[in-house]
Image 1 (tube, rainbow, N blue to C red):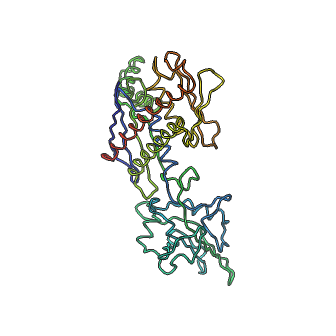
Image 2: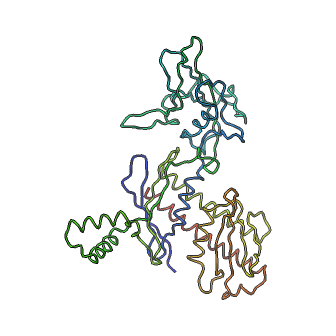
Image 3: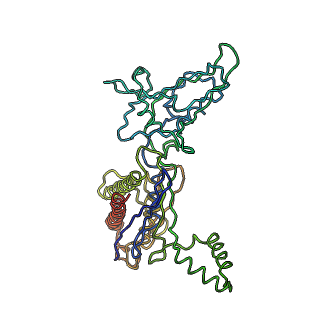
Length: 412
């Protein structure tokens, strides 16, 4: 049986983005479910720091004064969507973000940007409370400009650096009346599953790596069939074909499935794009390892998030994986079908379904293979055989992510 191997090569990237190719070998391949699981993890499961502002939850922002043109909800949402470049592993609510601006000049308007926000440290020896309390933070010692700009980074436009615009205060043209905004807050650690404010990346995409040699061969064959001989019309025909169907011609493995990909990541996080990609692999390994323990507990009687029960069809069973979503469901289904359903394997069928998009569980449907001796055994025997089988499958999957992680650490 062929073994998995992977190669990663970095490409010339746009500023701020990391582009690289992820290549599986031709014999074993690299299934798109593996690559897609890393994309999904990057998009939604990387811990990050942002302000919580949802109506149904305890808010991280307190607005003391707001007589600007924007309602409180808009202001809080704008603040929440600003990337905060803080390490979630080291964050312990040690910073308070304080904004106090008033438009009392003769100018028609005043821009309010991230430069107006003060970042204040927690007082020494003070443990932050669950509520946001101003007296727990040192209001007289804001972070330096260098430290401030590292957390609230500016964006670049046409070679210049600019702070992020929050809103603008307008002149009231009435003596003694001013537009003013005063607020403060302490952000929280979460991930993109709660809200896009905690997304660690602005871009995490992959495409099948196009096989230029294959495309040119097919394009020339089609040009010959149409009798296009002269150079200019032939070039125009090939270019037109590239636009209409060039993406169909990509690198494939021995099973005619995609095995080489172009991956792009743009970090909006304290961690670099390379570090985030490595972390996504670590998260997938941890999830698979936890699921492996829960399968073992299924037969040992320990705590488990897995429910095993028969369906209406004989020898077909349901594995309900609580706390999981399409990321793991698709990986398990694809790997089982591609590498563990052979003529005499224990399983003859595997498919998954996420019954409801707002509920965190996946239904994995399996069918025992009539050609395998387990098929005629008792329910208890089948469960024990299935747990041993899934142990091998999950260990195999963890090996794939470990191989990708090892290569990423060497290359990216």
